[in-house]
Length: 396
Image (cartoon, rainbow, N blue to C red):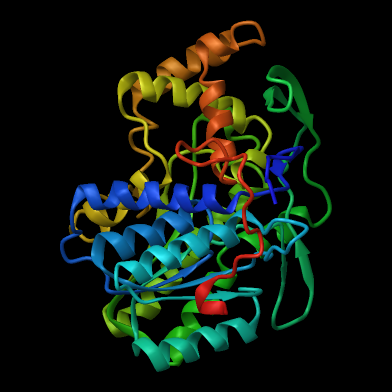
């Protein structure tokens, strides 16, 4: 099949297998160029390992620390008539590169929220690795079935208390428009916390600890975002912000539990980047486009792989986590520097459709979005026929 991008709303419904593999290879090259992560993890579980920060976490651990990795995700394989999801092809590319490097890599495709998948993963760790010394929790899902009650929870991205109106970027047309979002109602907050809060992270860690597969000194990290005030109504102070507050509460609970194995739990606040999750949040794509321009001009721009490499290399495994007053690791520090935020804030007030390409890096945003699905990478022949039914080696 010859595969081209087909964009619907804020998602791309196709993915390119060779392009995704090239994207993975580029991330691996970044890590290798930086050399070994001294004292890094050796046996790693990544829950939500197929795209974005989760994929980059797996890559950084494997190719920066020669770690054996177990990845968990929920992706759709392809066939002769349709492509797989990008996360499927990312994992194919990752496992092939890991095998070539002599690294253990095993993946599980299923509902990470379920007890069944937790059991399967724990059994694999028992059989193949014995224990893990790092657990990365990086799930992003719009819904979750509670394994204890069977109830299906659905998250929403809404402000709390009042209607929110601000600028946003229509990524289909490249125009700056006004968006109005109605506030949360009913049980929207509780539903969003149930999906995106810390409950499932804690269920995973409890199950792993009970099964005895957490190594002494184990560390675990989940990811969050805070951002500037312009995004707070829809993010930090919105329904998703309540979920992130719950995540931080869970971190403190896990800290206490992991003391039994001299372990530590972290919440890492990461930089705003183009991911499949962030592209769905109103206001955020415009902010990211402005941010990219400012940070690239300043020479401080990072993508997911640079962020995750820095998290492991300079913070968690360099004994310099530098937590903030709330105990969070802040690798959004370059984004949130006064110099960058002053530039972005000034341009936010000025930006419109006419000056978008001058004040913001809309092209960079678009290119970053397409790369998530394996498109627009150098060295890939997008006119060539490709096998869209390729399988993940460890799932074959």
